[in-house]
Length: 446
Image 1: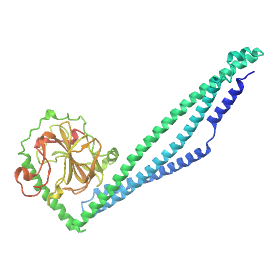
Image 2 (image 1 turned 60 degrees about the vertical axis):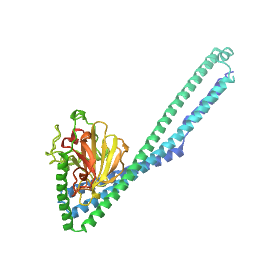
Image 3 (image 1 turned 180 degrees about the horizontal axis):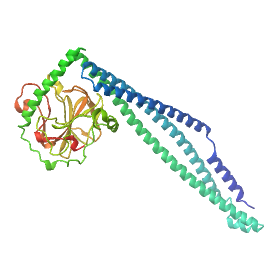
Image 4 (image 1 turned 90 degrees about the vertical axis):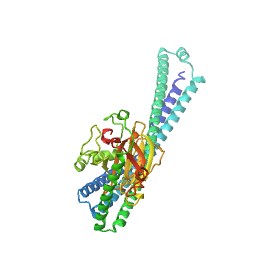
Protein backbone atom coordinates (compact mmCIF):
# COMPACT_ATOMS: atom_id res chain seq x y z
CA UNK A 1 0.00 0.00 0.00
CA UNK A 2 0.98 3.62 0.57
CA UNK A 3 1.93 4.06 -3.06
CA UNK A 4 1.56 7.80 -2.67
CA UNK A 5 4.50 8.06 -0.27
CA UNK A 6 7.35 6.93 -2.51
CA UNK A 7 6.77 9.29 -5.47
CA UNK A 8 5.93 12.04 -3.00
CA UNK A 9 9.25 11.80 -1.21
CA UNK A 10 11.11 11.43 -4.51
CA UNK A 11 9.41 14.64 -5.62
CA UNK A 12 10.26 16.44 -2.40
CA UNK A 13 13.87 15.27 -2.56
CA UNK A 14 14.19 16.29 -6.21
CA UNK A 15 12.57 19.68 -5.65
CA UNK A 16 14.78 20.26 -2.61
CA UNK A 17 17.88 19.53 -4.66
CA UNK A 18 16.69 21.91 -7.36
CA UNK A 19 16.00 24.77 -4.95
CA UNK A 20 18.91 24.23 -2.63
CA UNK A 21 21.67 23.14 -4.98
CA UNK A 22 24.83 25.22 -4.34
CA UNK A 23 26.31 27.16 -7.23
CA UNK A 24 29.74 27.95 -5.85
CA UNK A 25 31.26 28.89 -9.24
CA UNK A 26 28.61 31.55 -9.89
CA UNK A 27 28.79 32.79 -6.30
CA UNK A 28 32.58 33.14 -6.49
CA UNK A 29 32.35 34.97 -9.84
CA UNK A 30 29.69 37.34 -8.49
CA UNK A 31 31.80 38.02 -5.40
CA UNK A 32 34.83 38.82 -7.57
CA UNK A 33 32.77 41.16 -9.74
CA UNK A 34 31.39 42.99 -6.71
CA UNK A 35 34.93 43.41 -5.40
CA UNK A 36 35.95 45.02 -8.70
CA UNK A 37 32.90 47.30 -8.60
CA UNK A 38 33.81 48.39 -5.05
CA UNK A 39 37.36 49.15 -6.18
CA UNK A 40 36.03 51.17 -9.11
CA UNK A 41 33.79 53.17 -6.77
CA UNK A 42 36.76 54.04 -4.56
CA UNK A 43 38.73 55.18 -7.61
CA UNK A 44 35.73 57.21 -8.77
CA UNK A 45 35.59 59.05 -5.45
CA UNK A 46 39.28 59.95 -5.83
CA UNK A 47 38.68 61.20 -9.40
CA UNK A 48 35.74 63.33 -8.25
CA UNK A 49 37.96 64.94 -5.61
CA UNK A 50 40.58 65.65 -8.29
CA UNK A 51 37.97 67.24 -10.57
CA UNK A 52 36.77 69.44 -7.69
CA UNK A 53 40.36 70.52 -6.98
CA UNK A 54 40.82 71.59 -10.60
CA UNK A 55 37.57 73.55 -10.37
CA UNK A 56 38.86 75.51 -7.37
CA UNK A 57 41.99 76.42 -9.29
CA UNK A 58 39.91 77.50 -12.30
CA UNK A 59 37.70 79.66 -10.08
CA UNK A 60 40.81 81.29 -8.57
CA UNK A 61 42.15 82.09 -12.05
CA UNK A 62 38.76 83.55 -12.98
CA UNK A 63 39.18 86.17 -10.26
CA UNK A 64 42.52 87.30 -11.67
CA UNK A 65 43.10 90.04 -14.22
CA UNK A 66 42.36 88.94 -17.78
CA UNK A 67 45.81 88.34 -19.24
CA UNK A 68 47.21 86.00 -21.85
CA UNK A 69 48.91 83.93 -19.17
CA UNK A 70 45.78 83.58 -17.06
CA UNK A 71 43.75 82.60 -20.14
CA UNK A 72 46.32 80.01 -21.22
CA UNK A 73 46.55 78.67 -17.66
CA UNK A 74 42.75 78.37 -17.49
CA UNK A 75 42.67 76.46 -20.77
CA UNK A 76 45.44 74.13 -19.59
CA UNK A 77 43.65 73.47 -16.29
CA UNK A 78 40.38 72.90 -18.13
CA UNK A 79 42.09 70.27 -20.28
CA UNK A 80 43.45 68.51 -17.19
CA UNK A 81 39.99 68.58 -15.62
CA UNK A 82 38.47 67.15 -18.79
CA UNK A 83 41.10 64.40 -18.88
CA UNK A 84 40.14 63.46 -15.31
CA UNK A 85 36.45 63.54 -16.23
CA UNK A 86 37.24 61.15 -19.09
CA UNK A 87 38.91 58.79 -16.60
CA UNK A 88 35.84 59.04 -14.36
CA UNK A 89 33.52 58.24 -17.26
CA UNK A 90 35.69 55.29 -18.32
CA UNK A 91 35.52 54.11 -14.71
CA UNK A 92 31.71 54.32 -14.78
CA UNK A 93 31.63 52.42 -18.08
CA UNK A 94 33.77 49.66 -16.56
CA UNK A 95 31.46 49.45 -13.54
CA UNK A 96 28.37 49.31 -15.77
CA UNK A 97 29.92 46.43 -17.73
CA UNK A 98 30.75 44.63 -14.48
CA UNK A 99 27.20 45.06 -13.22
CA UNK A 100 25.86 43.65 -16.49
CA UNK A 101 28.13 40.61 -16.03
CA UNK A 102 26.96 40.22 -12.45
CA UNK A 103 23.32 40.37 -13.49
CA UNK A 104 24.01 37.92 -16.32
CA UNK A 105 25.34 35.36 -13.82
CA UNK A 106 22.21 35.81 -11.73
CA UNK A 107 20.02 35.45 -14.82
CA UNK A 108 21.78 32.20 -15.71
CA UNK A 109 21.19 30.81 -12.21
CA UNK A 110 17.53 31.80 -12.25
CA UNK A 111 17.01 30.28 -15.71
CA UNK A 112 18.57 26.99 -14.48
CA UNK A 113 16.35 27.03 -11.39
CA UNK A 114 13.26 27.69 -13.49
CA UNK A 115 14.10 24.85 -15.89
CA UNK A 116 14.69 22.40 -13.03
CA UNK A 117 11.54 23.47 -11.20
CA UNK A 118 9.47 23.14 -14.36
CA UNK A 119 10.88 19.67 -14.96
CA UNK A 120 10.12 18.55 -11.39
CA UNK A 121 6.59 19.90 -11.48
CA UNK A 122 5.96 18.40 -14.91
CA UNK A 123 7.20 15.01 -13.72
CA UNK A 124 4.93 15.08 -10.70
CA UNK A 125 1.92 16.08 -12.80
CA UNK A 126 2.68 13.39 -15.39
CA UNK A 127 2.90 10.83 -12.61
CA UNK A 128 -0.57 11.76 -11.45
CA UNK A 129 -2.01 11.99 -14.97
CA UNK A 130 -0.64 8.60 -16.04
CA UNK A 131 -2.23 6.92 -13.07
CA UNK A 132 1.01 5.80 -11.51
CA UNK A 133 -0.56 6.55 -8.14
CA UNK A 134 -3.89 5.27 -6.88
CA UNK A 135 -6.46 7.88 -6.01
CA UNK A 136 -6.66 9.14 -2.48
CA UNK A 137 -10.06 7.42 -2.01
CA UNK A 138 -8.60 4.08 -3.18
CA UNK A 139 -5.65 4.42 -0.79
CA UNK A 140 -7.93 5.18 2.13
CA UNK A 141 -10.37 2.34 1.40
CA UNK A 142 -7.60 -0.18 0.87
CA UNK A 143 -5.80 0.78 4.07
CA UNK A 144 -5.52 -1.97 6.69
CA UNK A 145 -6.21 0.44 9.54
CA UNK A 146 -7.61 3.87 10.30
CA UNK A 147 -4.07 5.11 11.07
CA UNK A 148 -2.84 4.09 7.64
CA UNK A 149 -5.85 5.82 6.10
CA UNK A 150 -5.07 9.08 7.91
CA UNK A 151 -1.40 8.75 6.90
CA UNK A 152 -2.41 8.40 3.26
CA UNK A 153 -4.62 11.48 3.55
CA UNK A 154 -1.83 13.47 5.23
CA UNK A 155 0.65 12.52 2.53
CA UNK A 156 -1.77 13.61 -0.16
CA UNK A 157 -2.21 16.97 1.54
CA UNK A 158 1.57 17.37 1.90
CA UNK A 159 2.05 16.43 -1.74
CA UNK A 160 -0.42 19.07 -2.90
CA UNK A 161 1.13 21.64 -0.59
CA UNK A 162 4.64 20.88 -1.89
CA UNK A 163 3.39 21.15 -5.45
CA UNK A 164 1.74 24.50 -4.66
CA UNK A 165 4.92 25.74 -2.97
CA UNK A 166 7.02 24.79 -5.99
CA UNK A 167 4.65 26.58 -8.33
CA UNK A 168 4.84 29.67 -6.07
CA UNK A 169 8.65 29.43 -6.00
CA UNK A 170 8.67 29.17 -9.77
CA UNK A 171 6.61 32.34 -10.06
CA UNK A 172 8.93 34.16 -7.64
CA UNK A 173 12.05 33.12 -9.54
CA UNK A 174 10.43 34.17 -12.81
CA UNK A 175 9.61 37.58 -11.33
CA UNK A 176 13.23 37.91 -10.20
CA UNK A 177 14.40 36.92 -13.67
CA UNK A 178 12.23 39.63 -15.24
CA UNK A 179 13.58 42.20 -12.77
CA UNK A 180 17.17 41.21 -13.54
CA UNK A 181 16.56 41.45 -17.27
CA UNK A 182 15.05 44.91 -16.77
CA UNK A 183 18.12 45.85 -14.73
CA UNK A 184 20.39 44.67 -17.56
CA UNK A 185 18.41 46.78 -20.05
CA UNK A 186 18.75 49.81 -17.74
CA UNK A 187 22.50 49.25 -17.38
CA UNK A 188 22.90 48.93 -21.14
CA UNK A 189 21.01 52.22 -21.62
CA UNK A 190 23.27 53.78 -18.99
CA UNK A 191 26.26 52.39 -20.86
CA UNK A 192 25.15 54.02 -24.11
CA UNK A 193 24.68 57.35 -22.28
CA UNK A 194 28.13 57.10 -20.69
CA UNK A 195 29.74 56.29 -24.04
CA UNK A 196 28.05 59.37 -25.54
CA UNK A 197 29.40 61.41 -22.61
CA UNK A 198 32.87 60.02 -23.27
CA UNK A 199 32.69 61.02 -26.93
CA UNK A 200 31.59 64.56 -26.00
CA UNK A 201 34.33 64.86 -23.37
CA UNK A 202 36.99 63.86 -25.88
CA UNK A 203 35.62 66.44 -28.31
CA UNK A 204 35.72 69.00 -25.50
CA UNK A 205 39.43 68.39 -25.01
CA UNK A 206 40.02 68.83 -28.73
CA UNK A 207 37.98 72.09 -28.76
CA UNK A 208 39.94 73.47 -25.80
CA UNK A 209 43.29 72.60 -27.36
CA UNK A 210 42.22 74.15 -30.67
CA UNK A 211 41.20 77.39 -28.89
CA UNK A 212 44.51 77.47 -27.06
CA UNK A 213 46.49 76.92 -30.26
CA UNK A 214 44.52 79.61 -32.08
CA UNK A 215 44.98 82.11 -29.26
CA UNK A 216 48.74 81.56 -29.09
CA UNK A 217 48.97 81.90 -32.88
CA UNK A 218 46.96 85.14 -32.88
CA UNK A 219 49.03 86.70 -30.12
CA UNK A 220 52.36 85.05 -30.98
CA UNK A 221 52.45 84.27 -27.27
CA UNK A 222 52.97 87.93 -26.41
CA UNK A 223 51.00 89.71 -23.68
CA UNK A 224 51.07 93.02 -25.59
CA UNK A 225 49.52 91.34 -28.63
CA UNK A 226 46.84 89.78 -26.46
CA UNK A 227 45.85 93.10 -24.92
CA UNK A 228 45.82 94.64 -28.41
CA UNK A 229 43.50 91.87 -29.59
CA UNK A 230 41.15 92.51 -26.66
CA UNK A 231 41.10 96.23 -27.46
CA UNK A 232 40.32 95.49 -31.12
CA UNK A 233 37.44 93.25 -30.11
CA UNK A 234 36.01 95.90 -27.81
CA UNK A 235 36.22 98.60 -30.49
CA UNK A 236 34.72 96.37 -33.16
CA UNK A 237 31.95 95.26 -30.80
CA UNK A 238 31.04 98.89 -30.06
CA UNK A 239 30.85 99.67 -33.78
CA UNK A 240 28.74 96.57 -34.40
CA UNK A 241 26.32 97.42 -31.59
CA UNK A 242 25.76 100.89 -33.05
CA UNK A 243 25.09 99.50 -36.53
CA UNK A 244 22.72 96.92 -35.03
CA UNK A 245 20.91 99.56 -32.99
CA UNK A 246 20.34 101.66 -36.13
CA UNK A 247 18.90 98.62 -37.87
CA UNK A 248 16.71 97.52 -34.98
CA UNK A 249 15.00 100.89 -34.82
CA UNK A 250 14.00 100.64 -38.50
CA UNK A 251 12.74 97.06 -38.73
CA UNK A 252 9.09 97.04 -39.70
CA UNK A 253 8.13 94.10 -37.48
CA UNK A 254 5.41 94.01 -34.87
CA UNK A 255 5.47 91.98 -31.68
CA UNK A 256 2.17 90.96 -30.06
CA UNK A 257 2.82 90.35 -26.35
CA UNK A 258 -0.39 88.31 -26.00
CA UNK A 259 1.10 85.66 -28.30
CA UNK A 260 4.08 85.08 -25.99
CA UNK A 261 4.23 82.52 -23.17
CA UNK A 262 3.30 83.82 -19.74
CA UNK A 263 6.22 85.24 -17.76
CA UNK A 264 7.22 82.82 -15.01
CA UNK A 265 5.73 79.85 -16.85
CA UNK A 266 9.08 78.05 -16.91
CA UNK A 267 8.61 76.86 -20.49
CA UNK A 268 12.39 76.79 -21.09
CA UNK A 269 15.02 74.51 -19.60
CA UNK A 270 18.56 75.64 -18.88
CA UNK A 271 20.74 74.99 -21.94
CA UNK A 272 23.07 72.68 -20.03
CA UNK A 273 22.98 69.25 -18.43
CA UNK A 274 21.61 68.74 -14.93
CA UNK A 275 25.13 67.89 -13.76
CA UNK A 276 26.46 71.23 -15.03
CA UNK A 277 23.65 73.18 -13.36
CA UNK A 278 24.15 71.29 -10.10
CA UNK A 279 27.83 72.25 -10.20
CA UNK A 280 26.75 75.89 -10.57
CA UNK A 281 24.71 75.66 -7.36
CA UNK A 282 27.90 74.57 -5.58
CA UNK A 283 29.74 77.66 -6.87
CA UNK A 284 27.37 80.37 -5.67
CA UNK A 285 30.22 82.21 -3.94
CA UNK A 286 32.07 82.49 -7.27
CA UNK A 287 29.22 84.01 -9.31
CA UNK A 288 26.86 85.36 -6.68
CA UNK A 289 24.04 83.26 -8.15
CA UNK A 290 23.09 79.61 -8.58
CA UNK A 291 23.35 79.51 -12.37
CA UNK A 292 26.92 80.57 -13.30
CA UNK A 293 25.52 83.80 -14.79
CA UNK A 294 28.20 86.42 -15.43
CA UNK A 295 25.99 89.03 -17.13
CA UNK A 296 22.26 89.58 -16.88
CA UNK A 297 19.71 90.87 -19.37
CA UNK A 298 18.92 94.57 -19.81
CA UNK A 299 20.38 97.58 -18.05
CA UNK A 300 20.28 96.34 -14.46
CA UNK A 301 21.94 93.32 -12.87
CA UNK A 302 18.67 91.64 -11.93
CA UNK A 303 16.27 92.79 -14.62
CA UNK A 304 14.05 89.72 -14.40
CA UNK A 305 10.44 90.93 -14.43
CA UNK A 306 8.10 92.31 -17.07
CA UNK A 307 8.07 94.60 -18.91
CA UNK A 308 11.02 93.36 -20.95
CA UNK A 309 13.12 96.50 -20.80
CA UNK A 310 15.64 96.73 -23.62
CA UNK A 311 16.59 99.95 -25.41
CA UNK A 312 19.60 98.81 -27.39
CA UNK A 313 22.17 99.84 -24.78
CA UNK A 314 21.75 96.93 -22.39
CA UNK A 315 22.55 93.25 -22.75
CA UNK A 316 20.26 91.35 -25.12
CA UNK A 317 20.52 88.01 -23.30
CA UNK A 318 22.34 86.38 -20.41
CA UNK A 319 25.93 85.16 -20.34
CA UNK A 320 26.64 81.86 -18.60
CA UNK A 321 30.21 80.89 -17.77
CA UNK A 322 31.04 77.51 -19.31
CA UNK A 323 34.44 75.96 -20.06
CA UNK A 324 35.26 75.53 -23.74
CA UNK A 325 33.77 72.28 -24.99
CA UNK A 326 30.79 72.18 -22.61
CA UNK A 327 27.81 70.52 -24.39
CA UNK A 328 25.08 73.08 -25.13
CA UNK A 329 21.52 71.71 -25.09
CA UNK A 330 18.28 72.91 -26.67
CA UNK A 331 16.19 74.55 -23.97
CA UNK A 332 12.97 73.46 -25.70
CA UNK A 333 12.02 71.31 -28.67
CA UNK A 334 11.75 73.08 -32.00
CA UNK A 335 13.34 73.55 -35.41
CA UNK A 336 16.75 75.01 -36.23
CA UNK A 337 15.91 78.35 -37.84
CA UNK A 338 19.52 79.02 -38.86
CA UNK A 339 23.16 78.67 -37.85
CA UNK A 340 26.10 80.93 -38.59
CA UNK A 341 29.62 82.05 -37.84
CA UNK A 342 30.27 85.79 -37.74
CA UNK A 343 34.01 85.12 -37.41
CA UNK A 344 34.03 84.28 -41.11
CA UNK A 345 33.70 88.02 -41.77
CA UNK A 346 37.03 89.72 -41.09
CA UNK A 347 36.85 92.24 -38.28
CA UNK A 348 33.36 91.19 -37.14
CA UNK A 349 33.41 90.47 -33.42
CA UNK A 350 29.87 89.46 -32.67
CA UNK A 351 28.17 86.13 -31.92
CA UNK A 352 30.90 83.94 -33.38
CA UNK A 353 29.39 80.53 -34.04
CA UNK A 354 25.67 80.60 -33.26
CA UNK A 355 22.48 78.54 -33.46
CA UNK A 356 18.90 79.80 -33.36
CA UNK A 357 15.94 77.51 -32.59
CA UNK A 358 12.36 78.48 -33.37
CA UNK A 359 9.78 77.04 -30.98
CA UNK A 360 6.08 76.68 -31.57
CA UNK A 361 5.00 78.98 -28.75
CA UNK A 362 5.96 82.40 -30.13
CA UNK A 363 9.58 82.50 -28.97
CA UNK A 364 12.97 81.56 -30.39
CA UNK A 365 16.25 80.91 -28.56
CA UNK A 366 19.82 81.86 -29.50
CA UNK A 367 23.01 80.06 -28.46
CA UNK A 368 26.17 82.01 -29.30
CA UNK A 369 30.00 81.97 -28.95
CA UNK A 370 30.08 78.21 -29.64
CA UNK A 371 33.26 76.38 -30.54
CA UNK A 372 31.40 73.73 -32.56
CA UNK A 373 27.92 73.42 -34.08
CA UNK A 374 26.26 69.97 -34.26
CA UNK A 375 22.96 70.84 -35.97
CA UNK A 376 21.88 72.32 -39.30
CA UNK A 377 19.13 74.58 -40.64
CA UNK A 378 15.70 72.94 -40.78
CA UNK A 379 16.62 70.13 -38.37
CA UNK A 380 14.12 69.17 -35.69
CA UNK A 381 15.57 69.04 -32.17
CA UNK A 382 14.24 67.88 -28.85
CA UNK A 383 14.56 69.45 -25.42
CA UNK A 384 18.00 68.60 -24.06
CA UNK A 385 19.47 67.64 -27.44
CA UNK A 386 23.10 68.74 -27.87
CA UNK A 387 23.35 71.64 -30.33
CA UNK A 388 27.11 72.09 -30.12
CA UNK A 389 29.95 72.89 -27.73
CA UNK A 390 30.55 76.12 -25.83
CA UNK A 391 33.51 78.30 -26.71
CA UNK A 392 34.74 81.86 -26.95
CA UNK A 393 34.25 82.66 -30.63
CA UNK A 394 33.11 86.13 -31.68
CA UNK A 395 33.19 88.92 -29.13
CA UNK A 396 34.24 86.94 -26.06
CA UNK A 397 37.17 87.54 -23.80
CA UNK A 398 36.49 84.32 -21.92
CA UNK A 399 34.60 81.08 -22.53
CA UNK A 400 30.85 81.42 -22.02
CA UNK A 401 27.46 80.92 -23.62
CA UNK A 402 25.38 83.89 -24.71
CA UNK A 403 21.78 82.71 -24.34
CA UNK A 404 19.10 84.89 -25.88
CA UNK A 405 15.31 84.66 -26.09
CA UNK A 406 13.40 86.43 -28.87
CA UNK A 407 9.80 87.04 -29.90
CA UNK A 408 9.73 85.03 -33.12
CA UNK A 409 7.52 87.43 -35.08
CA UNK A 410 9.92 90.33 -34.38
CA UNK A 411 13.06 88.49 -35.51
CA UNK A 412 14.77 87.92 -38.85
CA UNK A 413 18.01 86.32 -39.99
CA UNK A 414 19.87 88.79 -42.21
CA UNK A 415 23.01 90.83 -42.78
CA UNK A 416 23.35 94.56 -42.17
CA UNK A 417 24.22 95.03 -45.84
CA UNK A 418 20.93 93.45 -46.92
CA UNK A 419 18.90 96.00 -44.98
CA UNK A 420 20.89 99.22 -45.02
CA UNK A 421 23.74 98.68 -47.42
CA UNK A 422 26.27 98.80 -44.59
CA UNK A 423 29.87 98.30 -45.64
CA UNK A 424 31.84 98.14 -42.40
CA UNK A 425 32.31 95.68 -39.57
CA UNK A 426 29.72 92.93 -39.68
CA UNK A 427 28.03 94.09 -42.90
CA UNK A 428 28.22 90.64 -44.49
CA UNK A 429 27.79 88.50 -41.39
CA UNK A 430 24.49 86.63 -41.19
CA UNK A 431 22.88 86.77 -37.75
CA UNK A 432 19.56 87.15 -35.89
CA UNK A 433 18.28 90.74 -35.88
CA UNK A 434 15.18 91.83 -33.98
CA UNK A 435 13.11 94.89 -33.18
CA UNK A 436 13.89 96.31 -29.75
CA UNK A 437 10.74 94.91 -28.14
CA UNK A 438 11.44 91.41 -29.52
CA UNK A 439 14.38 90.88 -27.15
CA UNK A 440 13.03 89.01 -24.13
CA UNK A 441 14.54 88.32 -20.75
CA UNK A 442 15.56 84.64 -20.62
CA UNK A 443 15.06 84.52 -16.85
CA UNK A 444 11.37 85.26 -17.39
CA UNK A 445 10.96 81.88 -19.08
CA UNK A 446 13.57 79.62 -17.45
